[in-house]
Length: 476
Image (cartoon, rainbow, N blue to C red):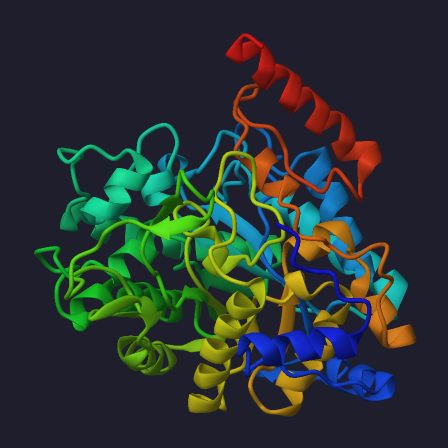
Protein backbone atom coordinates (compact mmCIF):
# COMPACT_ATOMS: atom_id res chain seq x y z
CA UNK A 1 0.00 0.00 0.00
CA UNK A 2 1.29 3.45 -0.85
CA UNK A 3 1.19 5.95 2.00
CA UNK A 4 3.72 8.63 1.10
CA UNK A 5 1.83 10.75 -1.44
CA UNK A 6 2.63 14.15 0.04
CA UNK A 7 3.73 16.92 -2.28
CA UNK A 8 4.79 19.36 0.41
CA UNK A 9 5.82 19.61 4.03
CA UNK A 10 2.45 21.20 4.80
CA UNK A 11 0.63 18.12 3.43
CA UNK A 12 2.80 15.77 5.49
CA UNK A 13 2.27 17.88 8.58
CA UNK A 14 -1.49 17.82 8.07
CA UNK A 15 -1.42 14.04 7.67
CA UNK A 16 0.50 13.67 10.94
CA UNK A 17 -2.18 15.68 12.72
CA UNK A 18 -4.96 13.71 11.04
CA UNK A 19 -3.68 10.28 12.15
CA UNK A 20 -2.79 11.47 15.66
CA UNK A 21 1.00 11.47 15.31
CA UNK A 22 1.25 14.25 17.85
CA UNK A 23 4.99 13.82 18.46
CA UNK A 24 5.88 14.38 14.79
CA UNK A 25 6.61 18.10 14.52
CA UNK A 26 8.58 19.97 11.85
CA UNK A 27 10.79 23.03 11.59
CA UNK A 28 9.92 24.78 8.34
CA UNK A 29 12.62 27.42 8.11
CA UNK A 30 15.59 26.15 6.08
CA UNK A 31 18.13 28.28 7.92
CA UNK A 32 16.84 27.06 11.26
CA UNK A 33 17.10 23.43 10.07
CA UNK A 34 20.74 24.07 9.10
CA UNK A 35 21.45 25.69 12.44
CA UNK A 36 19.92 22.93 14.55
CA UNK A 37 21.41 19.98 12.66
CA UNK A 38 24.83 21.68 12.55
CA UNK A 39 24.80 22.07 16.33
CA UNK A 40 27.82 20.50 18.07
CA UNK A 41 27.06 17.82 20.65
CA UNK A 42 29.10 17.08 23.77
CA UNK A 43 29.47 13.34 24.39
CA UNK A 44 31.42 12.73 27.56
CA UNK A 45 34.63 14.66 27.07
CA UNK A 46 34.25 14.65 23.28
CA UNK A 47 32.62 17.31 21.08
CA UNK A 48 31.12 16.09 17.81
CA UNK A 49 31.03 18.52 14.92
CA UNK A 50 27.28 18.34 14.25
CA UNK A 51 24.14 16.54 15.38
CA UNK A 52 23.72 14.19 12.42
CA UNK A 53 24.36 10.46 12.72
CA UNK A 54 24.54 7.37 10.54
CA UNK A 55 23.16 4.34 12.36
CA UNK A 56 24.88 0.95 12.31
CA UNK A 57 23.82 -0.85 9.14
CA UNK A 58 25.25 -4.28 8.37
CA UNK A 59 26.54 -4.62 4.82
CA UNK A 60 26.80 -8.43 4.97
CA UNK A 61 29.87 -7.93 2.81
CA UNK A 62 32.86 -8.97 4.91
CA UNK A 63 35.22 -11.81 4.13
CA UNK A 64 34.49 -15.29 5.39
CA UNK A 65 36.96 -14.76 8.23
CA UNK A 66 35.34 -11.48 9.31
CA UNK A 67 37.53 -8.83 7.69
CA UNK A 68 36.14 -5.77 5.89
CA UNK A 69 35.96 -6.50 2.16
CA UNK A 70 35.78 -4.31 -0.96
CA UNK A 71 32.15 -3.21 -0.55
CA UNK A 72 32.72 -2.55 3.17
CA UNK A 73 35.52 -0.16 2.29
CA UNK A 74 33.41 1.54 -0.36
CA UNK A 75 30.48 2.05 2.01
CA UNK A 76 32.52 3.57 4.82
CA UNK A 77 34.46 5.83 2.50
CA UNK A 78 31.14 7.22 1.26
CA UNK A 79 29.91 7.66 4.83
CA UNK A 80 33.15 9.34 5.90
CA UNK A 81 33.01 11.84 3.04
CA UNK A 82 29.34 12.56 3.66
CA UNK A 83 29.61 14.97 6.57
CA UNK A 84 27.77 13.29 9.46
CA UNK A 85 29.93 13.57 12.58
CA UNK A 86 28.63 10.43 14.31
CA UNK A 87 29.22 7.36 12.14
CA UNK A 88 28.07 4.36 14.16
CA UNK A 89 30.01 1.38 12.82
CA UNK A 90 27.95 -1.70 12.10
CA UNK A 91 27.34 -4.82 14.21
CA UNK A 92 30.65 -6.64 14.57
CA UNK A 93 30.75 -10.06 16.22
CA UNK A 94 32.97 -10.63 19.23
CA UNK A 95 33.45 -14.32 18.37
CA UNK A 96 32.68 -16.73 15.55
CA UNK A 97 29.56 -18.34 17.03
CA UNK A 98 27.94 -14.91 17.34
CA UNK A 99 27.90 -14.04 13.64
CA UNK A 100 24.46 -13.63 12.06
CA UNK A 101 25.71 -14.65 8.64
CA UNK A 102 28.85 -15.93 6.96
CA UNK A 103 29.91 -12.42 5.94
CA UNK A 104 29.28 -10.50 9.14
CA UNK A 105 32.33 -8.61 10.35
CA UNK A 106 34.18 -9.98 13.37
CA UNK A 107 36.76 -8.25 15.54
CA UNK A 108 39.51 -10.56 16.76
CA UNK A 109 43.29 -10.81 16.72
CA UNK A 110 43.29 -11.96 13.08
CA UNK A 111 41.14 -9.08 11.79
CA UNK A 112 42.14 -6.09 13.92
CA UNK A 113 44.81 -4.80 11.53
CA UNK A 114 42.25 -4.55 8.70
CA UNK A 115 39.87 -2.65 10.97
CA UNK A 116 42.72 -0.29 11.84
CA UNK A 117 43.34 0.38 8.14
CA UNK A 118 39.63 1.02 7.60
CA UNK A 119 39.32 3.44 10.53
CA UNK A 120 42.45 5.29 9.37
CA UNK A 121 40.93 5.63 5.89
CA UNK A 122 37.68 6.99 7.29
CA UNK A 123 39.43 9.62 9.35
CA UNK A 124 41.75 10.56 6.48
CA UNK A 125 39.04 11.05 3.86
CA UNK A 126 36.81 12.88 6.35
CA UNK A 127 39.71 15.22 7.07
CA UNK A 128 40.23 15.76 3.34
CA UNK A 129 36.59 16.72 2.86
CA UNK A 130 35.88 18.63 6.06
CA UNK A 131 39.24 19.99 7.24
CA UNK A 132 39.36 17.99 10.46
CA UNK A 133 38.42 14.59 11.83
CA UNK A 134 39.00 15.64 15.44
CA UNK A 135 35.23 16.09 15.84
CA UNK A 136 34.27 12.80 14.15
CA UNK A 137 33.08 10.03 16.49
CA UNK A 138 33.10 6.40 15.27
CA UNK A 139 31.77 3.86 17.80
CA UNK A 140 32.05 0.19 16.84
CA UNK A 141 29.02 -1.95 17.64
CA UNK A 142 30.02 -5.17 19.41
CA UNK A 143 27.52 -8.00 19.20
CA UNK A 144 26.59 -11.62 19.62
CA UNK A 145 23.68 -12.53 17.34
CA UNK A 146 22.21 -15.05 19.76
CA UNK A 147 18.98 -16.54 18.42
CA UNK A 148 19.96 -15.35 14.94
CA UNK A 149 23.50 -16.72 14.96
CA UNK A 150 24.64 -18.83 12.02
CA UNK A 151 24.72 -21.78 11.83
CA UNK A 152 23.76 -22.55 15.46
CA UNK A 153 21.29 -20.37 17.34
CA UNK A 154 22.04 -19.36 20.93
CA UNK A 155 19.05 -18.28 23.01
CA UNK A 156 18.81 -16.58 26.38
CA UNK A 157 15.36 -17.93 27.22
CA UNK A 158 12.25 -19.38 25.61
CA UNK A 159 9.52 -16.98 24.57
CA UNK A 160 7.04 -19.34 22.86
CA UNK A 161 5.75 -16.60 20.53
CA UNK A 162 9.24 -15.71 19.29
CA UNK A 163 10.08 -19.42 19.17
CA UNK A 164 7.07 -19.93 16.89
CA UNK A 165 7.94 -16.99 14.64
CA UNK A 166 11.62 -17.96 14.32
CA UNK A 167 11.19 -21.74 14.16
CA UNK A 168 13.05 -22.30 17.43
CA UNK A 169 12.23 -25.77 18.80
CA UNK A 170 11.04 -25.91 22.40
CA UNK A 171 13.96 -28.19 23.34
CA UNK A 172 16.58 -25.77 22.00
CA UNK A 173 19.10 -25.42 24.86
CA UNK A 174 19.39 -22.09 26.66
CA UNK A 175 22.87 -20.63 27.06
CA UNK A 176 24.21 -21.38 30.55
CA UNK A 177 25.18 -18.82 33.18
CA UNK A 178 28.79 -20.01 33.00
CA UNK A 179 28.90 -19.50 29.23
CA UNK A 180 27.40 -16.03 29.57
CA UNK A 181 30.06 -15.19 32.13
CA UNK A 182 32.77 -16.38 29.72
CA UNK A 183 31.20 -14.29 26.96
CA UNK A 184 31.72 -11.17 29.07
CA UNK A 185 35.46 -11.51 28.57
CA UNK A 186 35.06 -11.76 24.80
CA UNK A 187 33.36 -8.37 24.88
CA UNK A 188 36.12 -6.95 27.06
CA UNK A 189 38.81 -8.33 24.75
CA UNK A 190 36.96 -6.97 21.70
CA UNK A 191 36.82 -3.55 23.37
CA UNK A 192 40.60 -3.65 23.72
CA UNK A 193 40.95 -4.59 20.05
CA UNK A 194 38.63 -1.70 19.16
CA UNK A 195 41.03 0.65 20.92
CA UNK A 196 43.92 -0.92 19.05
CA UNK A 197 42.08 -0.42 15.76
CA UNK A 198 41.56 3.28 16.45
CA UNK A 199 37.92 3.34 17.51
CA UNK A 200 37.26 5.89 20.24
CA UNK A 201 34.04 4.23 21.42
CA UNK A 202 32.43 0.80 21.73
CA UNK A 203 28.72 -0.01 21.68
CA UNK A 204 27.58 -3.01 23.72
CA UNK A 205 24.67 -3.79 21.40
CA UNK A 206 21.36 -4.68 23.05
CA UNK A 207 18.62 -4.48 20.47
CA UNK A 208 16.73 -6.28 17.66
CA UNK A 209 16.34 -9.56 19.53
CA UNK A 210 20.03 -10.50 19.60
CA UNK A 211 21.54 -12.19 22.64
CA UNK A 212 22.06 -9.23 24.98
CA UNK A 213 18.68 -7.83 24.01
CA UNK A 214 17.08 -11.16 24.92
CA UNK A 215 18.85 -11.14 28.28
CA UNK A 216 17.13 -7.87 29.18
CA UNK A 217 13.74 -9.50 28.63
CA UNK A 218 14.60 -12.84 30.25
CA UNK A 219 12.11 -12.49 33.11
CA UNK A 220 11.34 -16.22 33.12
CA UNK A 221 15.00 -17.29 33.05
CA UNK A 222 16.46 -18.83 36.18
CA UNK A 223 19.94 -18.19 37.56
CA UNK A 224 22.31 -15.24 37.79
CA UNK A 225 21.24 -13.62 34.49
CA UNK A 226 17.46 -13.96 34.61
CA UNK A 227 14.42 -12.96 36.63
CA UNK A 228 14.83 -9.66 38.53
CA UNK A 229 16.07 -6.61 36.65
CA UNK A 230 19.30 -6.65 38.65
CA UNK A 231 20.06 -10.07 37.19
CA UNK A 232 18.97 -9.21 33.65
CA UNK A 233 21.38 -6.24 33.63
CA UNK A 234 24.23 -8.16 35.33
CA UNK A 235 26.05 -8.78 32.04
CA UNK A 236 26.26 -5.04 31.32
CA UNK A 237 27.38 -4.17 34.85
CA UNK A 238 30.14 -6.75 34.62
CA UNK A 239 31.28 -5.84 31.10
CA UNK A 240 31.24 -2.09 31.70
CA UNK A 241 33.14 -2.58 34.95
CA UNK A 242 35.75 -4.84 33.37
CA UNK A 243 36.29 -2.45 30.46
CA UNK A 244 36.74 0.50 32.79
CA UNK A 245 39.10 -1.50 35.04
CA UNK A 246 41.23 -2.66 32.11
CA UNK A 247 41.24 0.35 29.79
CA UNK A 248 40.25 3.27 32.01
CA UNK A 249 38.44 6.06 30.16
CA UNK A 250 40.36 5.62 26.90
CA UNK A 251 37.26 4.03 25.35
CA UNK A 252 33.86 5.69 25.42
CA UNK A 253 31.06 3.30 26.40
CA UNK A 254 27.95 3.40 24.21
CA UNK A 255 24.87 1.31 23.69
CA UNK A 256 22.23 0.85 21.03
CA UNK A 257 19.34 -0.14 23.24
CA UNK A 258 16.09 -1.68 22.07
CA UNK A 259 13.59 0.03 24.36
CA UNK A 260 10.41 -1.81 23.33
CA UNK A 261 10.38 -5.41 22.15
CA UNK A 262 6.68 -5.66 21.30
CA UNK A 263 5.23 -9.03 20.27
CA UNK A 264 5.82 -11.05 17.09
CA UNK A 265 3.63 -10.30 14.08
CA UNK A 266 2.57 -12.58 11.23
CA UNK A 267 0.74 -11.97 7.95
CA UNK A 268 -3.05 -12.00 8.07
CA UNK A 269 -3.95 -14.28 5.13
CA UNK A 270 -7.16 -12.35 4.44
CA UNK A 271 -5.72 -8.83 4.34
CA UNK A 272 -1.96 -9.26 3.92
CA UNK A 273 -1.50 -6.91 6.88
CA UNK A 274 0.60 -7.72 9.90
CA UNK A 275 -1.23 -9.00 12.94
CA UNK A 276 0.17 -9.93 16.36
CA UNK A 277 0.35 -13.56 17.35
CA UNK A 278 -2.15 -14.33 20.11
CA UNK A 279 -0.54 -13.41 23.40
CA UNK A 280 -1.35 -14.03 27.06
CA UNK A 281 -2.20 -11.27 29.53
CA UNK A 282 -0.33 -10.55 31.65
CA UNK A 283 2.52 -10.92 29.17
CA UNK A 284 5.39 -12.55 31.07
CA UNK A 285 8.24 -11.93 28.60
CA UNK A 286 10.04 -9.11 26.86
CA UNK A 287 11.59 -5.75 27.56
CA UNK A 288 9.97 -2.34 27.66
CA UNK A 289 6.50 -3.86 27.17
CA UNK A 290 3.32 -3.17 29.07
CA UNK A 291 2.54 -6.57 30.57
CA UNK A 292 -1.20 -5.86 30.42
CA UNK A 293 -1.01 -4.68 26.80
CA UNK A 294 2.26 -5.76 25.18
CA UNK A 295 1.38 -3.84 22.01
CA UNK A 296 2.30 -0.70 23.97
CA UNK A 297 5.61 0.34 25.57
CA UNK A 298 6.21 0.60 29.30
CA UNK A 299 9.53 2.35 29.96
CA UNK A 300 9.67 1.82 33.73
CA UNK A 301 12.37 -0.87 33.66
CA UNK A 302 14.10 0.77 30.71
CA UNK A 303 14.56 3.98 32.68
CA UNK A 304 15.88 2.15 35.74
CA UNK A 305 18.35 0.25 33.57
CA UNK A 306 19.56 3.44 31.89
CA UNK A 307 20.19 4.97 35.32
CA UNK A 308 22.38 1.98 36.17
CA UNK A 309 24.10 2.03 32.78
CA UNK A 310 25.06 5.65 33.40
CA UNK A 311 26.42 4.80 36.84
CA UNK A 312 28.50 2.04 35.22
CA UNK A 313 29.96 4.39 32.59
CA UNK A 314 27.53 4.78 29.67
CA UNK A 315 28.10 8.06 27.80
CA UNK A 316 26.03 7.75 24.60
CA UNK A 317 22.73 5.97 23.92
CA UNK A 318 21.15 5.04 20.59
CA UNK A 319 17.41 4.44 20.97
CA UNK A 320 15.86 1.60 18.96
CA UNK A 321 12.58 -0.35 18.91
CA UNK A 322 11.33 -3.77 17.89
CA UNK A 323 12.99 -6.55 15.94
CA UNK A 324 13.42 -6.76 12.15
CA UNK A 325 12.86 -10.52 12.46
CA UNK A 326 9.43 -10.57 14.04
CA UNK A 327 7.87 -7.08 14.03
CA UNK A 328 9.80 -5.00 11.47
CA UNK A 329 7.23 -2.20 11.28
CA UNK A 330 8.08 -1.19 14.86
CA UNK A 331 11.71 -0.52 14.10
CA UNK A 332 11.50 0.53 10.47
CA UNK A 333 8.21 2.12 9.37
CA UNK A 334 8.05 1.21 5.68
CA UNK A 335 6.27 1.93 2.43
CA UNK A 336 6.77 -1.58 1.04
CA UNK A 337 7.63 -4.76 2.99
CA UNK A 338 10.53 -6.96 2.07
CA UNK A 339 9.50 -9.89 -0.10
CA UNK A 340 7.27 -12.39 1.72
CA UNK A 341 6.65 -10.17 4.74
CA UNK A 342 3.46 -8.49 5.92
CA UNK A 343 2.10 -5.10 4.91
CA UNK A 344 2.13 -2.25 7.44
CA UNK A 345 -0.56 -2.88 10.08
CA UNK A 346 -0.66 0.84 10.93
CA UNK A 347 -0.05 4.13 9.19
CA UNK A 348 3.74 4.55 9.07
CA UNK A 349 3.39 7.99 10.66
CA UNK A 350 2.20 6.22 13.82
CA UNK A 351 5.41 4.16 13.79
CA UNK A 352 7.46 7.33 13.40
CA UNK A 353 5.47 8.90 16.22
CA UNK A 354 6.21 5.90 18.48
CA UNK A 355 9.93 6.31 17.86
CA UNK A 356 9.82 10.02 18.60
CA UNK A 357 7.63 9.53 21.68
CA UNK A 358 9.89 6.90 23.26
CA UNK A 359 13.18 8.60 22.40
CA UNK A 360 11.83 11.99 23.45
CA UNK A 361 10.62 10.72 26.80
CA UNK A 362 13.98 9.09 27.49
CA UNK A 363 16.05 12.08 26.36
CA UNK A 364 14.03 14.41 28.58
CA UNK A 365 14.32 11.99 31.51
CA UNK A 366 18.11 11.90 31.06
CA UNK A 367 19.06 15.31 29.65
CA UNK A 368 22.74 14.86 30.49
CA UNK A 369 22.99 11.64 28.44
CA UNK A 370 23.14 12.38 24.69
CA UNK A 371 20.89 10.12 22.63
CA UNK A 372 20.60 9.32 18.94
CA UNK A 373 17.08 8.91 17.58
CA UNK A 374 15.76 6.45 15.02
CA UNK A 375 12.66 6.14 12.82
CA UNK A 376 13.30 9.07 10.49
CA UNK A 377 13.77 7.47 7.06
CA UNK A 378 10.09 7.06 6.16
CA UNK A 379 9.72 10.86 6.24
CA UNK A 380 11.93 11.01 3.13
CA UNK A 381 13.29 14.50 2.38
CA UNK A 382 11.39 15.95 5.33
CA UNK A 383 13.16 13.87 7.98
CA UNK A 384 15.61 16.71 8.57
CA UNK A 385 12.72 19.06 9.40
CA UNK A 386 11.37 16.57 11.96
CA UNK A 387 14.83 15.96 13.37
CA UNK A 388 15.41 19.68 13.76
CA UNK A 389 12.15 19.96 15.69
CA UNK A 390 13.15 17.14 18.04
CA UNK A 391 16.50 18.80 18.70
CA UNK A 392 14.83 22.18 19.21
CA UNK A 393 12.41 20.66 21.72
CA UNK A 394 15.20 18.92 23.67
CA UNK A 395 13.80 15.51 22.69
CA UNK A 396 16.98 14.18 21.05
CA UNK A 397 20.64 15.18 20.55
CA UNK A 398 21.46 13.30 17.35
CA UNK A 399 19.22 12.74 14.33
CA UNK A 400 20.21 9.42 12.78
CA UNK A 401 19.32 7.43 9.70
CA UNK A 402 20.34 3.89 8.77
CA UNK A 403 19.04 2.56 5.44
CA UNK A 404 18.64 6.19 4.32
CA UNK A 405 22.41 6.54 4.43
CA UNK A 406 22.82 3.63 2.03
CA UNK A 407 20.74 5.61 -0.44
CA UNK A 408 22.16 9.06 0.33
CA UNK A 409 25.52 8.81 2.17
CA UNK A 410 26.22 12.54 1.83
CA UNK A 411 22.86 13.78 3.12
CA UNK A 412 24.66 15.76 5.82
CA UNK A 413 26.54 17.79 3.22
CA UNK A 414 23.28 18.94 1.65
CA UNK A 415 21.90 19.84 5.07
CA UNK A 416 25.00 21.88 5.91
CA UNK A 417 25.29 23.57 2.52
CA UNK A 418 21.63 23.90 1.45
CA UNK A 419 19.36 23.22 4.40
CA UNK A 420 17.34 20.77 2.31
CA UNK A 421 17.60 17.33 0.72
CA UNK A 422 17.35 16.20 -2.88
CA UNK A 423 14.04 14.38 -3.26
CA UNK A 424 15.44 12.19 -6.04
CA UNK A 425 18.05 10.73 -3.68
CA UNK A 426 16.21 10.01 -0.44
CA UNK A 427 15.27 6.49 0.67
CA UNK A 428 11.70 5.55 -0.25
CA UNK A 429 11.63 2.68 2.34
CA UNK A 430 11.01 0.03 -0.31
CA UNK A 431 13.04 -2.48 1.75
CA UNK A 432 15.24 -3.88 -1.03
CA UNK A 433 18.19 -3.66 1.36
CA UNK A 434 16.42 -5.99 3.80
CA UNK A 435 15.57 -8.38 0.98
CA UNK A 436 19.27 -8.70 0.13
CA UNK A 437 20.16 -9.23 3.80
CA UNK A 438 17.86 -12.25 3.88
CA UNK A 439 19.37 -13.92 0.79
CA UNK A 440 21.87 -16.65 1.72
CA UNK A 441 21.97 -18.70 -1.49
CA UNK A 442 25.29 -17.81 -3.10
CA UNK A 443 28.74 -19.35 -2.94
CA UNK A 444 29.69 -17.31 0.15
CA UNK A 445 26.45 -18.08 1.98
CA UNK A 446 25.28 -14.46 1.97
CA UNK A 447 24.54 -11.73 -0.57
CA UNK A 448 25.82 -8.26 0.33
CA UNK A 449 23.23 -5.57 1.00
CA UNK A 450 22.85 -2.06 -0.30
CA UNK A 451 20.33 0.03 -2.22
CA UNK A 452 19.58 -1.40 -5.70
CA UNK A 453 17.27 1.47 -6.81
CA UNK A 454 19.66 4.30 -5.89
CA UNK A 455 23.05 2.58 -6.14
CA UNK A 456 22.22 0.69 -9.31
CA UNK A 457 25.68 0.22 -10.76
CA UNK A 458 26.83 -1.80 -7.74
CA UNK A 459 23.72 -3.34 -6.17
CA UNK A 460 21.49 -3.63 -9.23
CA UNK A 461 23.43 -6.64 -10.59
CA UNK A 462 23.59 -8.14 -7.08
CA UNK A 463 19.80 -7.86 -6.76
CA UNK A 464 19.32 -9.44 -10.17
CA UNK A 465 21.63 -12.33 -9.28
CA UNK A 466 19.90 -12.88 -5.92
CA UNK A 467 16.48 -13.05 -7.55
CA UNK A 468 17.59 -15.30 -10.41
CA UNK A 469 19.35 -17.67 -8.05
CA UNK A 470 16.31 -17.83 -5.80
CA UNK A 471 14.03 -18.59 -8.77
CA UNK A 472 16.30 -21.40 -9.92
CA UNK A 473 16.30 -22.87 -6.41
CA UNK A 474 12.50 -22.78 -6.35
CA UNK A 475 12.32 -24.39 -9.79
CA UNK A 476 10.66 -21.41 -11.48
